[in-house]
Length: 124
Image 1 (tube, one colour):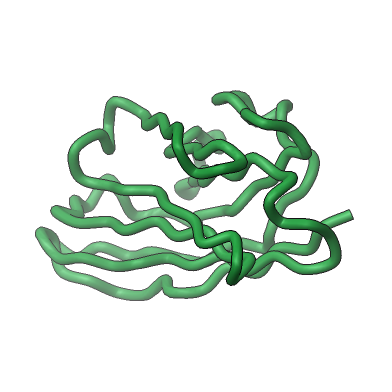
Image 2 (image 1 turned 180 degrees about the vertical axis):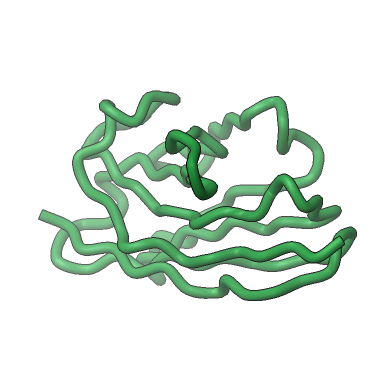
């Protein structure tokens, strides 16, 4: 079993940047595909980005492609989400998720473990 703790959220102006971090503990981090999801108030949780076990393969939601970058450092048990060109519609709680698999996919149901979330607020 793996425990996930996100950090790095905050308030940023539109057009600005933030880097979210998610530190894993309790299991072999390199055994897990990782992902970021987000949930704005009054909406369903949605896929943002995912990365394979070894970090070589990534995928993004169309809404963030070209602006967000997911990466991982297995030696640090950490996955990152670098966000740039932030827009007011990016404001949400961002959640880190893990699946004990080479690849996790885009579906919420594919992930077994979740962090508590970190809030991102974007002012216009």
